[in-house]
Length: 157
Image 1 (tube, rainbow, N blue to C red):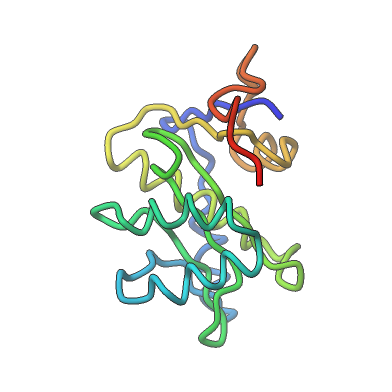
Image 2 (cartoon, rainbow, N blue to C red; image 1 turned 45 degrees about the vertical axis):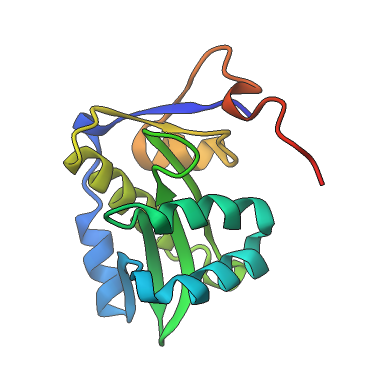
């Protein structure tokens, strides 16, 4: 998959979605350093070792650059930035049972807002999986000639 570019200075406003999710019991917030072992176990179990490795890097950043979606005291989604490299968004994911409720869009928007607040004008979605999701949610556009991109030559297990 190609990388995608997002204009952070031109993000659609999804604050209403974040507020609505909060009213329904889903909180979007940064992970706490003390939760690292819980977050890492969850990401490893739900999405695999590769994403867990990148999440580990996001958890080591100051401030932590991993956002969580929490419902009933449990993680249902996450979004990292500044993990694989600077100005990269990802990995991010939502458990299958929680999909279709806007949690992914809320996590995406919240992570991109954090990147904008740290001074970036653009964000790169590395090796964007569901390209249509990113295009519709935040106007992301494919970066020409970015496949295989940053991840080329990555070790395989």
